[in-house]
Image 1 (cartoon, rainbow, N blue to C red):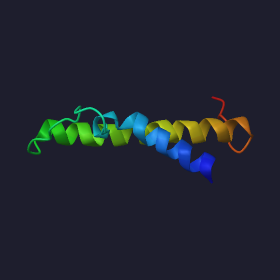
Image 2: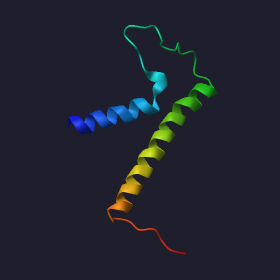
Image 3: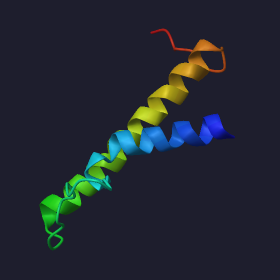
Image 4: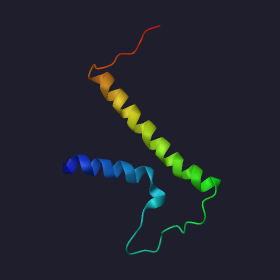
Length: 72
């Protein structure tokens, strides 16, 4: 459980660097109103994370033989 939960947290933090907070330093970004750029950045992180996890699952399933690459 520790390994899986720790890995999930590391992946989340890697793709959401703008949401990190530090206890000893005042490095947080002040979030202003929600404009189109802030909304885009919010969903961009989620899309990148989803595509990366999907690519990992696809590659692993191909390597262990669950899926195959069609030949043209």
